[in-house]
Length: 521
Image 1 (cartoon, rainbow, N blue to C red):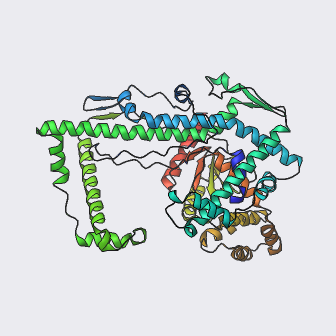
Image 2: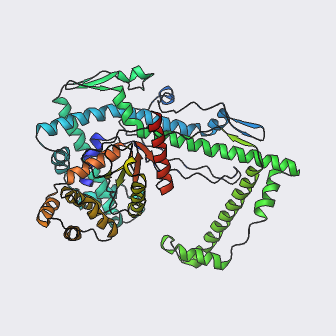
């Protein structure tokens, strides 16, 4: 799928952040808990940095945060106390939305121009981009990669042969980005494009969603279209801000409990921690260090004798962290605690299910959409869960599958094409069952072998697979997934809402919630 990178550059937002669940930190105290590092989106050089006022008005906040975010044994923790320590991280996240909104208008203009040009030439969009961007970019030579390496050697901590594939990939991407920009500029110059705004801002109210930001060949682009495209990003930012605040509240609650317990025992907080953590920390034995080394040998650089001190130190710190977490949890159980933070609710996204593999009642009140990768072990593990849910809910649930082959899986894209070729002959589910069962054998010859096993017309199947006839269907799913914020597989959506808990219990809870929402309407 890397050959279609230019398509993603032109028509997809480059600022989507993965909607993967953030692991909730173990409750502990500020004394030994390092603050989690935050991944900061890097804005493209061409995007002007937003002002402080613009960043504050990002249109990305959920429901207002209460003034008192927590009360622990009568001690109040305020919003100002919490946000004062994490404001820089929150400001960066807000800025990412402002910058993405500024880019989104151009991205949507380019997308419409691209689709119109593809239709005019009677080509698919991926085919058009392959001809105009990928083919014209050319492949970087080894000499060019060597030149780049020599110019940047001081910042590269590896020999040339080790990093050569990465350098070539980087140079290829840079060329395709520049060629994509040139192509977009040519399309704009040859089209009727009128941009009505210089500063793309969020709507102040429902009526503001109707504002016309641009007109492309007579077609209006409104604020609503921009905001709807940004929903996955905005939700991701809301989740990150919530986790930042949740972590800070946990730290403040535990600090308060620690101080209260120290006062109760008439000792300092340090003396209390020494008694409950330091004194209970056991020495790490040679056998324990050796066992850790053997279990992690593939990820450890060096012989055991050389790195034993680091292993011992690491295991000691982990033991202290566990003891402190257990002590914090003990204090919490006997405390009167109220936390007023609420996790953001996933937005309802528009997800196309037309011309997709589906099981169940077409008019079911709940639709479960899965973005899958046939080489992904987690996707294979999810199949029994999905079968159980489909059987359990009967006519109340419809399962729809869309493709999202990941770049790191060499055979996933072709396997997705093969699944589409099998669907064309009415054997999608039988065929994909074999793909998930044989994830370590997905070469083209094996894909054809599986087609024979499920009784497909091999001549038709082989022709479809060899010609790349189904590549556009796979690419369409991939681009839709990127637009929806999909960053890993399997990814699930229940009636348009992202369902991050992939377990049977998690998906069942999401389905039950969707059924309840349907009953209220």
